[in-house]
Structure formats: C-alpha cells, structure tokens
Amino acid sequence: MASCFSLLSPNFFTNLQNQLNGAESPEELQSIINKIFADLSLMESTMTGQIDLLGPIAALLTAPISPTQAVTWIGNFINDFLQPIYIPYAKQIAQLAALASEISTLTSAINSIASTKFPGISFTIPTVNPNFCAI
Image (cartoon, rainbow, N blue to C red; front, top):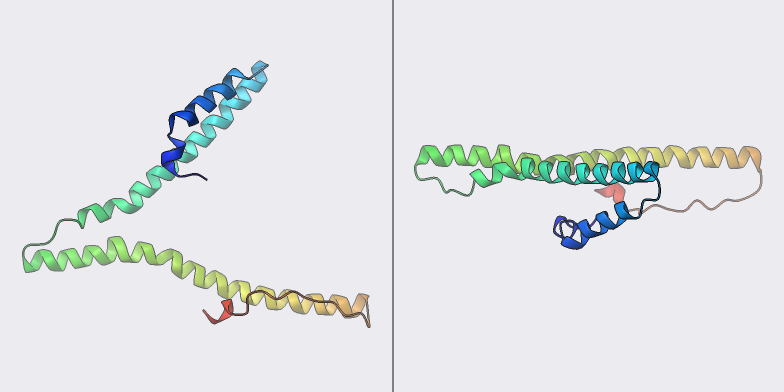
C-alpha cells in the first residue's frame, strides 16, 4: 500500500473518478462504488488507528516542570508510549516460537509420510532461516 500522502494526491481521486466514468452498466457502477468506498473506509480506519496509537505521544511533548509532573510524565511515557510499541514485539516472539514448533511437527510428518508411502526414496526438506529460533 502506498503512503497516505500519495493516496491523497489529486491523481488518486482523478483515477477514482475515471473508474466511475468507465462503468458500462448500473451493476458495474455499483460494484466500482462499493470497491472505492471499501478502500476509502480502510484508508480512514488506518489513519484513525494511527492517530489513536500515536496521539498519547503528543501529550509527552511538553516537558514536566515540577518533580510531581516528572513522575507523572515518566509513568505516562511508559504506559502510553513504551508499552504499546512493545506489544507487537512480544507477539512476534510468541509467534516465532509457535512457528518453530509447527515447523518441527511438519518436518516429522513429512518424514513419516515419505518413509511410509515412498520407502527408500529421499526427500529434501528446505530449511527455514536457522537463526530465527535463536531470537
């Protein structure tokens, strides 16, 4: 997907209008309308999601003056910035562990199937990046 800036370029909306103008039947026009507005809805929700995610950072742009404000600022920094950006990292670590386990299970199944259905024939099982399990 292109950046939001390119999606909001005048050419983007001109192209949408060209798609609309190219419809040759009411059904095709409705189909184009539905596709365009589904895409626009996705764009809007993506932008809104980013604003919601990054909005709390704006509150952190004002430096605290008093020690009490500094403690509050640090707490807000941890809660509103560090924790949300850590969540995807933690999820990826868990997914990598699950992936490693599933690859091991799949490799065992392949070896079992190969030896049962095709005894004496060797199959090459491609390797997945061997370093990913070390993360």
